[in-house]
Amino acid sequence: MAPPGAWSRAPAPVRRVWEGGRARGEARSGGSAPTRAAPPPSPGIGKSLARKLLSQGANVVLVALDDDLLTATSAELAAEFPARDVRAVGVDLGAPGAPYVATIDAATAGLPVSLVFLNAGYMLTGFFEATPLAAQLANLECNAVSAVAIAHLFLTRMVGAGRTGCLVFTSSAAAAVASPFTCLYAATKACVSSFGASLAVEARHRGIDVLVFHPSPVASRFYDRAHKLGVLDFFRGVAVHPDALPPAVFGAVGRTAWRDVGPTAVAFRLMMKLVDFNAMATLSALAAPLLPDFKLAVADAAAKAKKR
Ligand SMILES: NC(=O)c1ccc[n+]([C@@H]2O[C@H](COP(=O)([O-])OP(=O)(O)OC[C@H]3O[C@@H](n4cnc5c(N)ncnc54)[C@H](OP(=O)(O)O)[C@@H]3O)[C@@H](O)[C@H]2O)c1
Image 1 (cartoon, rainbow, N blue to C red):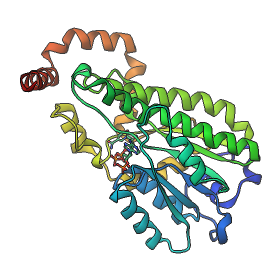
Image 2: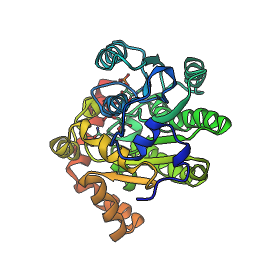
Image 3: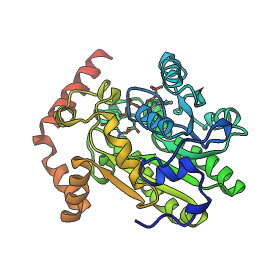
Image 4: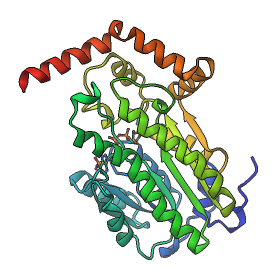
């Protein structure tokens, strides 16, 4: 695979990301290693990405909700990689008006951030109108708006400094399909996938690679707050450990704009090549009352209405 145009100008840990995680030589010492911002810490995908980057010699700034998990995760990673700089920035990425951008900007001022992972996200389930609007808008902010806002912050800095690097967006297999009972989730992920693919065209020849990856189900806290839905039970059953993702993700940076990781993501996109999106949505809408998950959502909405 041909290296990206800016290969020769890229600092070593950036090259290692482009090389798919196969490190050549030792990590640079001191404070000059490129720093990665914005992967949230958790037992989830963000933590696995952070650990992989630390193992390759990058310093990291973890961005997530300001809670014990953030403190514990940054302490755990700092202890595991004592030669690296691990910082934590606690913000709510669901806050309207993107106040978190100023906090992240201040916390990373002066750091040569060149590897940015936009990974935070969660899923609301059930009928769309059964969840209050404020909660839906916070979800939209976290999954889509915050990714756009944080990408803007660091891309501006990278281009301004003539620095090479990458932006990596975590989308979802759900981005490809109409997704009842997780309507907004699929919409936010489709936004991220489309945005990233367009941005990749603008950024590549300025030495910045943009990748959107579409994970298949991953065993994390992701499903913890979901309603009982048959399709989610199925996904839980086929979920893989988050550590399975970084090699595939790193291997795709600089080589493609989208990367489907795992069989569900591949199957969904393949399906949408065989069946028109509109036909699939229209036929699903006609068949909806027959779907077990539709019946579960009706029962859930009725139970909620009774409680009010
Ligand atoms: N798990 C899957 O099956 C799956 C499949 C496809 C795509 N994805 C995507 O992968 C990404 C990571 O998910 P995961 O599976 O690793 O689940 P996870 O363990 O729940 O991680 C989600 C991360 O997003 C962060 N986050 C959520 N709301 C936030 C907020 N308001 N402000 C700041 N940070 C917030 C969480 O931070 P805290 O640690 O502070 O809570 C958490 O670290 C998400 O974008 C998700 O949509 C997951």
